[in-house]
Each structure stands twice: as C-alpha cells, then as structure tokens.
Length: 251
Image (cartoon, rainbow, N blue to C red; front, side, top):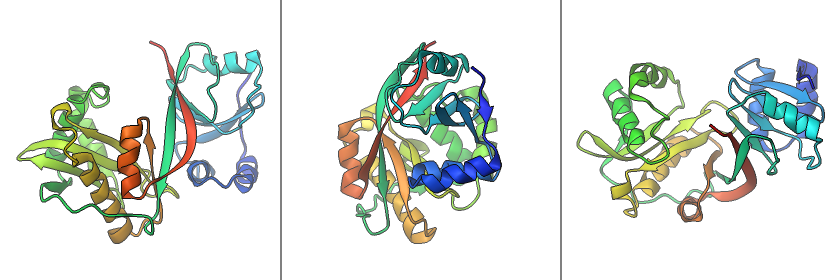
C-alpha cells in the first residue's frame, strides 16, 4: 500500500474539521510547509516527521494491510489515539496535559533556579540528561556542540530552566514548539539522587511563569506517563487533556 501525501487544500480542509489545539499546531506547520507533512495510507491519516508520525484518524478497525504498510515505513515512533497492533512496535500510554494562565498556580521560586542562555549552560543541561535513566541516548556527548548550536539558535519565546548546584544541573526542562499554537514543556528530568525534593515542580513552575507572564503564551502542554508526575503537574494548574499511545519500534 502506497503512502500518499496530502495537498495543501486537503490539509486546509482537515484543519477545519479538527478542534484539538495539539493537532492543529502540527497541521498549521504542515500548511506552512515546515518540518511536517500530512499523508494518507489507506484509511490512516497522519502527520509525518523525518523519523516519526502522529496518527490523526481514530478508526479502531484498520486493516492488517494498512497496519503492515504503516510498520513498513520504518518510523522510530508513532503517536496514536489508540493502541494499534502494529507489527514490530510496543505501546506506552501517555497523558497529554494542558494549562492556561488562568489555571496556573505558581510555586514559590527556588533561588537556585537558572534560565539557561549560554553554551556552558546547555552543556550542563545535556550532562544532566545523560545522568537520568532512560534519557542517556537522547543527548550523546559527541553531539554536544551540534546540540549547543541548535539550542542557542532557538528564537523567542524559547526558554530552558534548570535548578542548579554550582555548575551542576539537578533538575531541568525546556520548551519545544514555542512559536506554535500549543507550545510544550519537554524533557522534565531530575537526577535520581535528587528526587522527591520538589525540584521538578520548581522547574516547571518557572517555565510556566516565564511563558505565561513574560512571553504571553496562551496555553502550554506536556506529556506525562506516570501518575506521581501527573499529581505534580495538576498542582501547578495542568489538567488531563487526552490519552494517547506512543508506539516505539523494537530494536
């Protein structure tokens, strides 16, 4: 089964039938010809990135041929509204959470919070991520200079925050898609030995404060996979917005 890319008019028509800000933000990028393209594979409609995709259609009865064709694309990850039985992939349930300025409940600011702006700041950030189980391969040391250049090139209203101890980051997070309809807080991480001290809540609270009160962002989102983390985010003003499944290709 051949994958067919959607035309500009088809994407525009699709945008008018969808009201979810999460999907609309990516459809908007597709309309602008950015790093995402809309496509169809039989009855499966999705948004394609270089190595991943978001399935838009909620049809739960896709044919075996459609699912096998989706698997044959060789994508590293596929985000879907339901746990599709795609050959070679395993599913993890995720919760999309959203917050607005009116729902935001700021946590008292920790004096060790630092807004990251320099090459040294981002090297500290990448070092933290390599020390967190499950994130070790996300920011490999040989890619530090390339990643530093990328982070330093992000434009307003991008923001990254860390809670530090001297030159060491104990907890951190940053914004992605900061210029989109629905900016997202991502890579919330704390060193294993520093957990249960409220650091993640402080970092996320600071990012929310910068986004809402300085950069005038109207809504934020983040992904959550654990209820203990969800409780932290709800206390800051996030609310559950929907359940999704992240399908990852087996190695």
